[in-house]
Length: 57
Image (cartoon, rainbow, N blue to C red; front, side):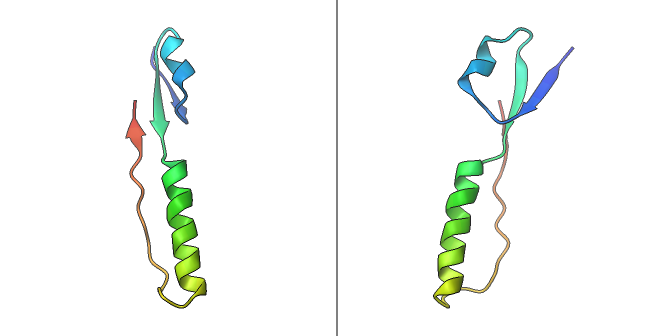
């Protein structure tokens, strides 16, 4: 049996069977969103789509 979870924590390595985790990049998404918001509020940027890659571990 294989299990999967969203969100990556160091504790997942100690579980048996090992759980595959998806790290959706929450921190990077927050940074990008803040930069985009500031740029739009100050009139320096148009809305754009930014893709943050997720990683499996």
